[in-house]
Image 1 (cartoon, helix red, strand yellow):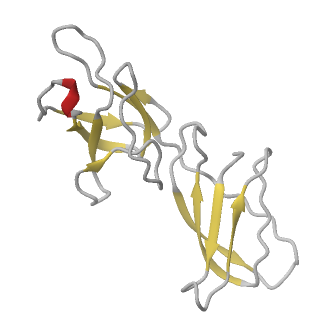
Image 2 (tube, helix red, strand yellow):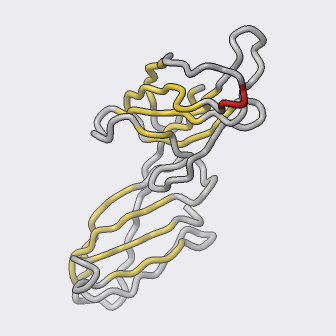
Length: 169
């Protein structure tokens, strides 16, 4: 996976070793770490398919000096959210959406375009927003409608089954 951010750390930043960077066009990245166990966070680049933040642990041995390692990035579900006028079917721009994903214990929170980052996106001129989310069950709703749009806040919710590698609208 090209353009993926990779971060490895060992213990608190004041006392442990760490390394980070971005994979090249072939998906390769070279860690330069001493032996030990490291927590790794792998974050997809903006617009990089349908991948989600992936966490894992790696172990660097004393030898050999170079140790190839393959980290697999988990697939997410692409979600297209739409805010439309019930009478005209026209999209409503500037709408913020909310989500509650089962199993993440985060509660109701604003939808982000990708996992691991906060970008506070809003619907485009056609009332659409693309996001990549973790697979599982999800509930989506309108979070905030621009006052200037003339629309009232909606409490409608949609329950959605989010399957890895699939697209849901």
